[in-house]
Image (cartoon, rainbow, N blue to C red):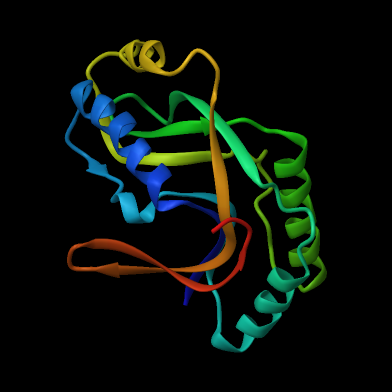
Length: 181
């Protein structure tokens, strides 16, 4: 099983993210755009996990206590090279989000799982392997973002499974702790 921990968003906010993604489509070509049902904020990517380890992960999930109720995001950016970029909406690193991510990483390490060593950069992926029409093109999207960062209520913190299908990647909730409904 290919698993990760994520913050899930309300369906109405996923609709708002589609409009940001539509602006990205105007300044990129080729690549794969994230299906709206898959929008999330990764907290920890685990990769391939044996089924016997899932109960440990469910225990970790149930013991998380530092869960934020809202997140703020506004700036579109990218990772990688402009010819094959991962375009994302950057999520602000507020204290509650960073505390949750640190609590999760500590629990994973205590249970013998590995965690990423690079600095955590919270974001919502809008597309992968996208070719930017020019390096500065995402600035036009920033100009259309609200003056103050948009606030997104947290629906849940979830253990997610990633499955590759003929139509692309599908993310399914294995278990979740609801925050907002």
